[in-house]
Image (tube, rainbow, N blue to C red; front, side):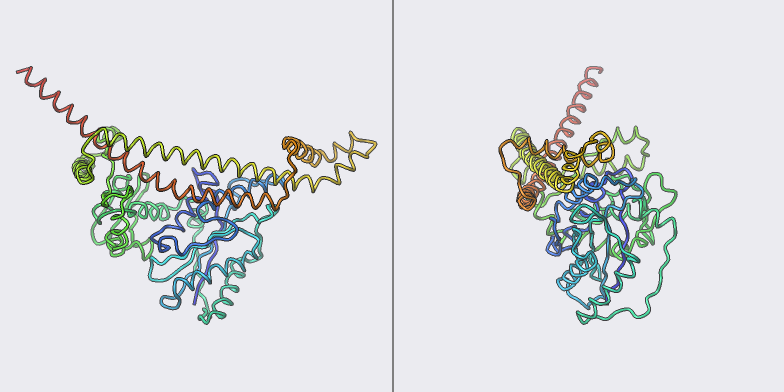
Length: 468
């Protein structure tokens, strides 16, 4: 038995369209949810760069059709969730069924990413598909999409020998909840993401709570664990976020074997130390933090400073110049990979633009020939100004190629796929280099902070001795 639902995705508040798609895809593809990414697959795109590819298709759609909706009305993606009865399917089978559902529901006309989550008692699959079709000349449209999705889901369940729900119950959602989910302002969704981020790489439950406090959340412990962010009227109990956010679940996730194994690898290939930056207490107090926060921050800084020093000694980095050199090397590597990715993205954008010109040229060729043969060119141009402008822009782009032959659309698609594969390889190195750079930067900044504090204390002692 599997249940399914679909919701439209809109641009989140304070995010660009690409950022909104990227954040949602990153959440769906979290390694701890998808067995280190083994349960992630995609159609006509790469999972790592799906947001960028979705965005390019939308730019092509605007260029080809001239149509554009307001940010509030524009549906940028659709999310489908398919949840299975515990124990009825394996993760691999659930993933195959999810991919098949996505292919049938979109008709193979839209890019999509499929990510199966195994971090909860019930296996469930997230499907994010592009609202813009592969030809970039239309958008997804279906009459009663929820009904169609349920019908296809039931058919797949029966085909795979799974049970189906005979009399599903309707669950209403308030207008406020619907609007919050649509515009990305749901307190619960924001809290889920904050918790997931804080749990990433944490060493203990206490470390998790410290990260939540450092992120600005008030924490209330007791019979229930509750959080409140600045600007919220009331606390939100973690158990209301779902089965994965109850106190018991958070205790388990904070100290899970998977979390410890990931930590043991370490961001820079070390012995597993996860170092956090020291807090600028004076700055936080100037922002209005209270005495309780100051007390917690001082203890936090002492622990992180001790961990930093222990890490440096254990890894043979007790020479400051060596630490500074490694930090500089990691920054250089990260910057080199960033420039390489930007070059690839620029070439991909040029590829997409040239493909647009080729398509436009073919679509407007007859109109341009008619314009050339017309005896009333002024009137003809006024009537077909947009088509003629597109045709002439395409011809100008072809002239810029010089003596090079105009490529075929299929050739451009192959080149785009090769560029995408190269970017994917670079992106894996980019993520590793970024983690390494942040790791060394944190170590160096913590040592700089400790040294500056010690220097300040020594100067104070000297001043006091002189006064005596």
